[in-house]
Amino acid sequence: MLTWVNADPAFNARYTGAVASQVYSYETKRPALGLRVPGAWTWLTVAIAAVVALPVLVVGSRIFVDSGGVWEHLAETVLPLYVGNTLLLLLGVGVLAGSIGVAAAWLVTMHQFPGSRILEWALLLPLAVPAYVLAYAYTDLLAYAGPVQTALRGAFGWHSARDYWFPNIRSLGGAVLMLGLVLYPYVYLLARTAFLEQSVCVLEVSRTLGRGPWRNFFGVAVPLARPAIAAGLALALMETIADYGTVSYFGVATFTTGIYRTWFGMGAPVAAAQLAAAMLVFVAVLIGLERWSRGRARYYHTTGRYRHLSPRPLRRGKGLAALAVCAAPVALGFLLPAALLLHLAIGQGDPLWGRRFLDFARNSFVLAGVTAGLAVLMAAVMAYSMRLRPTWMTRVSVRIASLGYAVPGSVVAVGVLIPFAAFDNTVDGFLRDTFGVSSGLLLTGSIAALVFAYLVRFLAVSYNTVESSLGKISPSMDHASRALGHNPRRTLLRVHAPMMRGGLLTAGLLVFVDVMKELPATLILRPFNFDTLAVRVYRLAADERLAEASTAALAIVAVGVVPVVLLSLAIARSRPGCGPCATAPVPPPTGNPLLRRD
Image (tube, rainbow, N blue to C red):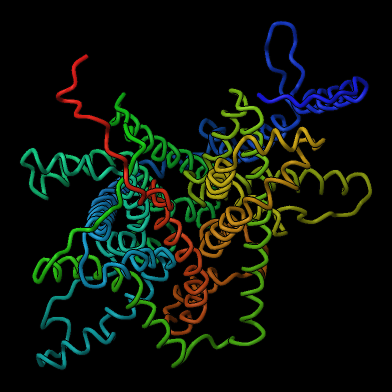
């Protein structure tokens, strides 16, 4: 620690007192026992966690409420079907997304073949396509009257479906394929980052011990990247549970479709909440199985020195095979459906194109923009609170506030609608009894319920990005700002916010795109006569008007491409030691350590 001393004692006293007062205002006063008293930032984080946890608590509280026999009826008739289809869907998507994501990440990271540099970022493009949009596009492509089957009948002289067999895309297998093609980027994203962070020396040592490329991949690289792969699979499976548009359109009965049908078809909100609670058990089991499978195993890098990563060239047949493996999911998950949607939009498109279509787009952008701004603000508060005082209370609150991403949109919608409707009914009853006027639907009749549901669902996405960006700022910046007389709030606004502008924009953009694609919560909570692009696509596709739905679907895909490019650039710079010092030669040791005597 350096201390600056002035010859004037009076100046020293004033300077020391000023700095001490700033330190005292920055650090919350501690009692004599040494325990920390929670400060304003901690209480603000606790309040955010309490509000965000409300829908989950509401759903959980409905487990033991009498449903009037509806739950017993569901348990005897459709509940086994919901459980079986959900399990099969999770198993199929997990195998497909895991295989594509890990294989593609390893090939483009560790090997060089034709088009590998383009595929590094192109493999993320299917992330911009909602699964239900992909389902609509492939239904139009592979249906009986679609171009594929029409071409087959013309080529082979078939006259009807009785003359040949063709797989039915609108089935459980089709849903697995659609979700796997869209969700494998979650696994690819984290697996590629893990492979980039691995030391080349570890892989070379394995080769010197006689392991071939395949044994090196399965025996060294994959085990070291296991936490990242498991996290990517967990994200993909949570999105699978939360999906509504794909399984509903394909006629696959899962928990998500069951919640919607029970609430609106049977008029039984209590039974729908109990189905949502059972769905939460599925999510908890997924997270628990991943933690249990890891046990006490931990994965660390034992060196801080990284050599430049030199991809191994693949020649001729191997290079073409690698190109086919990596290009196939890009073509099937993005290029083909995007080209089909563009063709349909140009040829026919939405009949409401014009002012009415712009209303749909405006509604989507307003919801996404408001949610993104609030999510970034709340995430900044939580991340800065963790930076100021990482106490157990702050950690628990941040964990609770970040759990919303693991909760499906339909469950969040049920948890939001129950307390908001109770509030509206209470206020309306009070005003009717007291003043003889009706207040109407204050919360459930506005976009407030939708924005709140989106915040519960996607706050974790924003927090992870903001926390990562804030963690790269040196703590010395806080100390310097404190010494200059800034309190924590001014430090965050005037010092940290400008330095993490890129992270804040990225967090807001990711939430913006997620809100644009969100369907189940929007269907349940949207106000009357308030449709978004996602709802427009769903309603047209449900009426088999796929060509008309192409315009709104293409708009959603176009918006989703932007964060994909940003994510790709961030991954490419994520390898440790990629800075200018990474290429500096390491000086040889003085003397021969094998011949030196102690």
